[in-house]
Image (tube, rainbow over all chains, first blue to last red; front, side, top):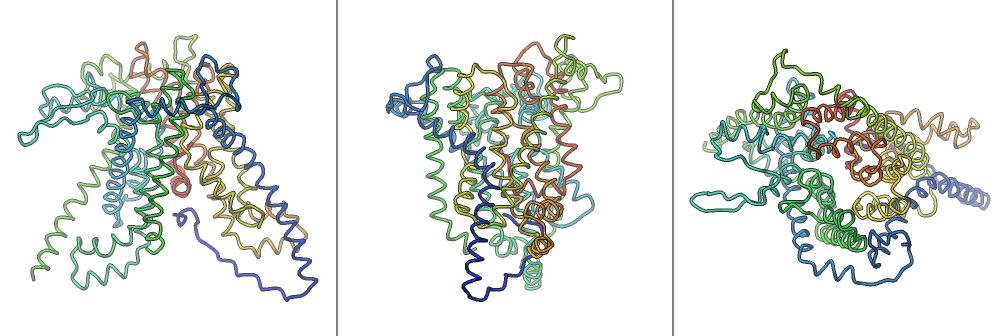
Length: 337
Length: 291
């Protein structure tokens, strides 16, 4: 992961071990103390900012989750209050919560898988050098670097049922009978091989948007990893008569697997926490309400701060458990690979 | 023999598929941005009449959308000039302040042994992966208690706290590539630690500093959730992202005018990205999208 950021590493030679002697040791311990002080001094501005703007607010969020705080009585709220478990009872028994948790899981798993899949295809397709490859590579990164508000806005316009380009193409070139409201329709009945299936169209749309926006991230990492695969391996397999799919299966895939595992964790975490995309695309409507959007709704629309904090806390805990289990199961394999 | 033909078939198939896949990916990635620019030059009438048009003739070209979106509200526009100024102010301050605290921090983590160094790294990692929405709740309460005054300074502090950890992580790796012997030589020549940092380590880590700075700028410029929480009540302190999202919900402002706003929001990032793509890719992979 750090190979791109690290640049060319110039390894410094290890310092020669000092001769054991009383004088030396005193000198070293004074130097160590001085180094300790300097280190703490230099890191302290960062620590102060993180403590004030991250750690303290999070502790407060935990305190809020155990209090009956509403937007109306917000003025007098602080760390200390009447602690109660009511928020958690309310949150866990409200029918919408598990639905939105399930939506979050489906959204994160599908979005992550799709983004990494497309990123892999892109990295493989652009593996061989050709004229203009650099420009194409850079262009493929655009969805990732573009501001999310602009990206969601242009896609909402493209998918608009009245004047959206996608619906225009569908109706004029693909023979759709009715325009599809991609972002506001919960389900779309489609007949496939004579079977009537209800597609969760809005959810599928936000998943595709997530894949569109984050495949460049996977593409970038996998391209870097592909560049580090020793060419001799591939050459030897080619001489032995391995076909391209065989070479991918037996040579590239095992090399890429650790990178894909790391990518899966990173993308899953970020997608699981994602708020902007869904809030801006659908506002959480039509079956796309993920937990973070639900927290926002509780906070602003309902003004139920305590319940919002409790839900956000549950979200963070579930994420921690999922990542913990994953690392427990696969962490060792990654180290070996 | 059969594997030889299979090899030939597969190679033939890949030779055909590769350019198709590349073209499809390129269209999917770039087309929305082309469409954004296209719509920003059209009038709403011409869009509604012909949604399928993918180019415009010279006489159709309508620049009034940009005028509409940039003019101040008092002149009947949407005031994006003010939003641009706010975004620029927030992003540049975030970059300056983050580098100011992250450079010494990164140097300390990479060079100095101090008590709690490992715990500090763990804390940074935790900050990095934390759900922003959990942080949003107490901050929302705090700013409601203060009377919801849109303060750009508070926003900058929150941004710095979010990106400082990533910056330290990135810069740390670069400081590690500066040979210790160079610093030791400077120390022998009588430089203090701060002088060594300024004269030796910083100039050598300059590419990293620039790429990191650009990366922070992009995060701060693109950020939406915290801007929404902090600034929504005060129109004159909206950032471009917030302005666009708030106005896109209203019926009075035509879509094509807001497309001009989208271009204004996106263009600085795209210019920055293509101008410094080599440098930036390093920053992108080291950090990511948290902001």
